[in-house]
Amino acid sequence: MLAWKLAIRFLKSGRLQTILITTGISIAIAVQVFIGLLIGSLQKNFVDRTLGSSADVVIESAIPGNPVLQDTSSIISVIENIGGIDSFSLVADGNAFAEKELAVYLRGFDLEQIDALYNIVDSIVEGSMPRVYGEVLIGQELSELLRVSPADTFTITLPGGDDYEITVSGIYDLGVAQVNESWVFTGIETVQTIFSYGEEITGIEVTTDDVFEADSIALAIKEEINNPDVTVTNWIDENEELFQALRSQDISTYMIQTAVIASVVVAIASMLAITVLQKSRQIGILKAMGIKDREASLVFLFQGFTLGFVGSIIGISIGVGMLFAFTTFVTDESGSSLISFYIDWGFILLSWVIAIVASTLAGVLPARRSARLSPIEVINAG
Image (cartoon, rainbow, N blue to C red):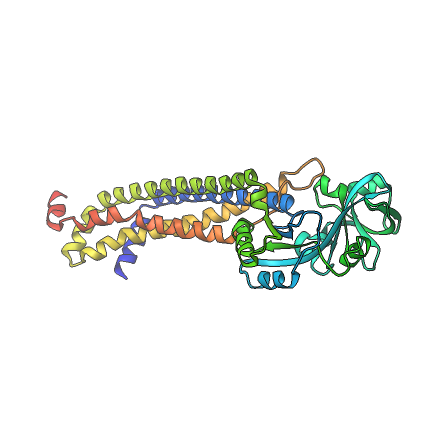
């Protein structure tokens, strides 16, 4: 295509100018991508560490003094038909005392489902998951307070005074001291037996595909259940300030992206406007030779596209490299990275597309200006 060939030729003829503009675009996109990915990584790490020790949606009994959940089968049917749910687990839990003095929270799960909720297997620092009745998984802080290790036993005392001896199968660290000090994980049958629940449960814990949709999913579940004896809570309503802080991070990312794209558009538009002036005589001659206004306009749109395409690819590569360097070399006192290296490919793709579209559109005004050039006037002026 003639317009494409001319666009490349014009970029090559002003090589220094092209290099400077491409470099500027690359730096701008690199900063945008780095900050966007850094904020996303910080957010993901924060969400994982903060919400990793809690479910997104919790369904429990609303009957005072009766922790057992009613009509469980119909509730499960509702959950299975609600969109946006990643996984759910039946729960039986209750409060007790360890060695008659430390308050603990016994949490019984289907051990095949628990990892989808809490990623507990990867959090085990010693020992293993419970396998049989009476085995439990305790937190690192609680193990230090009780001075027990895997294979040791200790006594659980219920509020009514009954004692049960249980065995430590493993020790976990979920990164939250309050959880590590009090939560005791075990199989659901163990808790059902200790608290005399029979085959009943006390709740259902749900994780969602998108943690920021937990409130709408909880509302949908509540409306479908339509039972005043059942309460449905979610982490967003329980942590409104945290949710607003996370949303503020998203807004800041969009503001940064907007500012960077605006600077890219101004830079490219300015460069192409100068090109129109510099190449006006050539354009006039080409028009006199029969090139159409449409093709003359496309020359500058193609230049904008090319600059955006090349600059954004280089910028994205630099931005990802900066994030990798940050997560590799910025560490805490123990030498561990402050945040995990996480790439949001959706954000990168969006940034790339926006950069290319904006760069192409930056050529619109220069393109319209070139289309209005009169070949006779330009040649005579030359």
